[in-house]
Image (cartoon, helix red, strand yellow):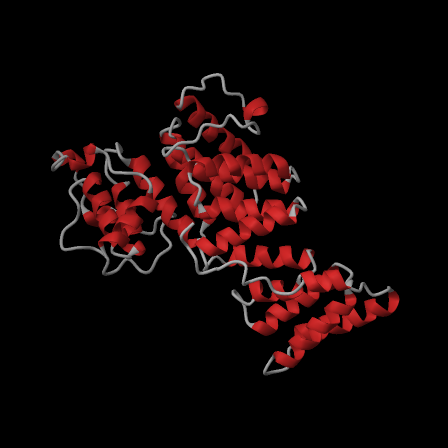
Length: 364
């Protein structure tokens, strides 16, 4: 239990400053609980009735501490409630922390609009805070606002490079070089976010340079490894894609994206049985068979597509409409175009090679 709490604290990112240890504030900093508006634009949890404690917090610092305690106790609604209460006090010395933590909870819930609103307010209060700028950029990327996300993430990375002594760092010249400095205090997600944007712009080599720089700091970063494996797939480097995706699934066997990326890599290599094994880790077998057949069809390998789609239909305990629909489509395409047949060497290579690797080995 203690270990779980430590992990939550680490994920929550910002540590409380020493100012939070100050005792009771002056009477001017005390607010009557009944005067607080809990129909707040940043609150989206359950009804606030019954959330209040036996007595209201005496100041903003106490409200934030209560919010932290509620968050660690797996009660995010109460945490939001307390952080918003912290914003109601006349003294706003810790308002940036409250806004940041409100944004963090909304980001975890997938409420990216509210997360952006809260993060942006924190960043307006402290414009030089690297974590705040990074967080705004990340949720903008989640919202599909790629251009403004890139500007915000570049701003965060530039501040991080300057922090490490590179005062003349120029994002237009140095972003995709091997000279990125990343340490334990760096906003790793900001770098990963810029890599994702580079991949979206089909600048895969540039994206890979960023991911590799991030891995120099944390070689086991799940997010970095997942995106690097997919970047290699997009770039057509199937060998490196397999290596990275296998490493990711070995270290993080519950990572659905990595298993899917590995499956796509095998399909592209026409190693369909390996792809089926990979995809079966994250979906029912009939759906995995359907997906292998569907992507084989997209690759123009109609003979294999029909084989796997027929297996999908036969495997499902009930009528699998999607596989049936794809099967009819593949059969029509096969009539109008020549089937792609595997050579004997390709068939040999398509056999499962799962004995070469152990996906349960997490020692490396």
